[in-house]
Amino acid sequence: MVNVDTVYQRVLVLANKEQRGYITPQEFNLYANQAQMEIFEQYFYDLNQASRVIGNDTVYADVDDMLEEKLQIFEFTDGPGIINNDAIYDGAGGGGINKRLPDYIYRISRIELNNKECEILNTKDFNEARKGGPLTLPTNDRPIANIRGGIMRVVAKNGGSVTPTGVIYFRRPNNVNWTYVVINKKAMYNAIPTTGHFELHPSEETELVYKILKFAGISMKRDDIMRAGQGLEMAQVQQEKQ
Image (cartoon, rainbow, N blue to C red; front, side, top):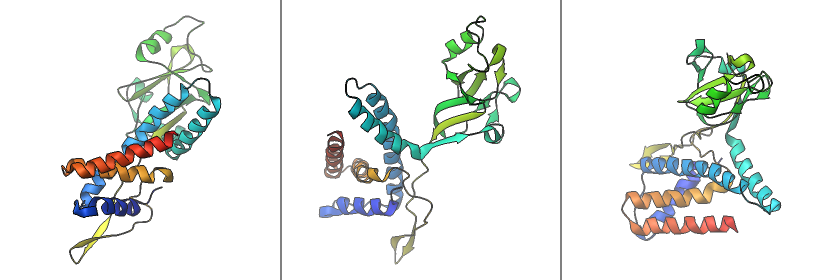
């Protein structure tokens, strides 16, 4: 977790240097959520890129472990009790067997049927596999899955549709919110201990500050603020790659 007030105060100091401008709490919250989502989404691109590194297992392992640590904050598992709750996983065709994925799921990493991993296929391969011959037809030990239009379908023995028993996924970060009260016409931070903070790994604090500063400069049409944030962000990225 990264403290939202710490980030806001650092952003204000940098933005107010030489009277560049003031960022309101409402503006900060917008920029903060955008910055958090950008960093979060970048994890998946970086992980994919790291997995393609050939010839240096040590470097790959270090990068992979670091990204996995940052992503574990958002990794969860839904079991049968949740999946079969239509208020969460709405039944979507097939007599309620197929399930519409809830909005809090950002990306699925694994679908299970009785602890057996389902092979997740694209729609074309999924439809062909469920109509395959005896050697290729899905079984309870070799189930297949497909996600189309937000609807999850799983097929097992004899090509029959079933409801999975486990979904392992990454959820979206919760919204950031710098909460405040107005005292003497000035916004003062009103701490709510368990909500409103950035959910990212603590190591992301500096990058959050730089990204928010960049967004603020673009919004205020202040090239000096935008360039300052952009330059600091690029320097931070270069440092991380060393």
